[in-house]
Image (cartoon, rainbow, N blue to C red; front, side):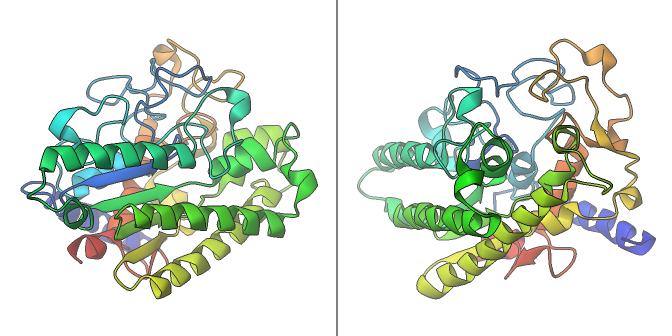
Length: 356
């Protein structure tokens, strides 16, 4: 990315910020995903994948919340870009009429497959998150009453789904799981997409009509991947990135099929892989091979290490061994909301989807 595109990016950020005040562009925003957007659903679970302690949240206004970042997640920024005056609450704490503006169901270590991430402890897989959404819909029906159409309300809402990273990081590329012995990368991508397709169709059957599906990012370039699998002379772990590209290709084809089969809905694909492949130095990033905080056995920040974290967090790509810093989340969310380049989103971006 050259200097002029960087300047263009800053201008787009400024334009987006002008739209965060006033009425939200959609009545509600529902979030399904993993640790990239989890904002506290794992806090009370028996799992190693929870981060409700410092230095996590060091840059978030209320401190540690369960977000796997130093600050806001992509879902938080998208809520701001959509005009909400608060971040969408996690399912575990959403109460009363608050759910009318949306719920975040995301769970750290969760995946498309139910067994994904089980070695870390309890989590809520995508199937479980969909079950929780059914419970939310029942609550919304009771709040709205018989005089307001719940289905009419829900079809105007935005739904974002981001799954698949853990199905590779915490399943396929770990020897304790059988997936790699059972499937080639090509076949595993197809198996994942088959299940993912049924899950997204279930979301449609629950009333979703504006659906954003995030592709998997460059997981082979995380500090954890490089230390665990070795780069073998490359900048990243190529076998992981090659596997993910197969999945993303299948996912984009699924988006086409979903749009063809459901003319009353709109599904869009966010090309997180290409976005994450940007020339990071043009955005001012200087460190992309290690995280900002000291990490422990599971690649998460060691507790109470806020004095030892990097001070120049805007120059770091990764917060811990897996998750981006807040500034990276800002960039990715901005490009998903308002595409900078034609490959960012397909067939449109979130700002246009919200207006449909």
